[in-house]
Amino acid sequence: MPPTPQDRPDIQVFREVTVIDALMREVIGRRLPPGMTHPQFDLLARFARHGDGETPAELARATMVTKGAMTNTLQRMEAQKFVAVLADVDDRRKKRVRVTRQGMIAYNTAVSALRGRNDAVRAAFTDNEFREALPFLKALRAFLEDLAESPGQPEDESR
Image (cartoon, rainbow, N blue to C red):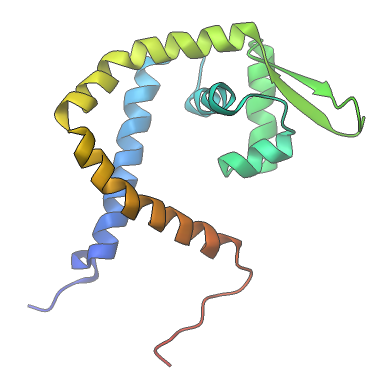
């Protein structure tokens, strides 16, 4: 029987990545504080790693969502007092997003709730197994980022 497209290793890799992402979102989503969504958690995690002060458009690009989705998320986070969206002091037409103390408390609460699951994942696999997976995953991500940024369709080399 000839191989099907589902048998191709590239298809299998993307399927695994998709399932892993869905499972991680499910695990995280079940442990978030009441009222916090996964996109809000992701944004708070970004602030914890990179600091705040970016514009909503910069955050949308960095998190790969539309400006409308980012605006919606920020409005909901502002209502919960997780962030403050303030006028840019240099360019009043722009807004800057600042994480609040309450936002960082909510983020740290969520991280604490996830600690047991994170520990279980770390116990199931060695640091070396994670390290060995990284070069391929990083290269794949970089390739896809370049592909996403290129304006045209890649040329079909088989012609």
